[in-house]
Image 1 (cartoon, rainbow, N blue to C red):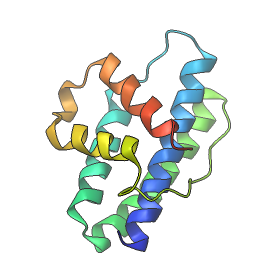
Image 2 (tube, rainbow, N blue to C red; image 1 turned 60 degrees about the vertical axis):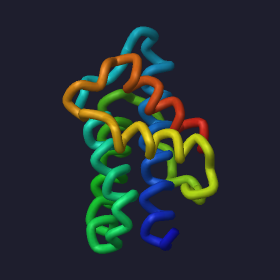
Image 3 (tube, one colour; image 1 turned 135 degrees about the vertical axis):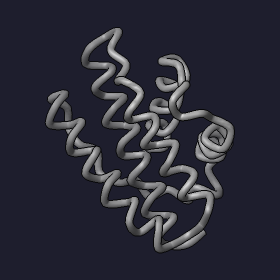
Image 4 (cartoon, helix red, strand yellow; image 1 turned 90 degrees about the vertical axis):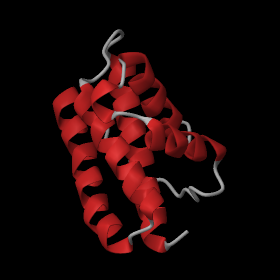
Length: 121
């Protein structure tokens, strides 16, 4: 895994953890489909191992962390030190992203995605 991939993995974990905090702060709340679409797209960018695309994607994910924090009143998580290729939960979300239709992710699957990423924080 490249350094760029490590940085994107860490940013995705931060986003998952921030969204999970927002869900925990408002029981029953699961974000609309946009965050799951963004995460799935970023996971597929990670899997493609195109460092140029990854380098463009990572700041967008970090900006989304701040967006969720600002709009939901929760702390923005910092990127985690994750070696995505070695972490089983990260492998699971990569496999999910490879097969998912981002526009058809159910709230239950989206919640699983966020909480699985958060488990790596």
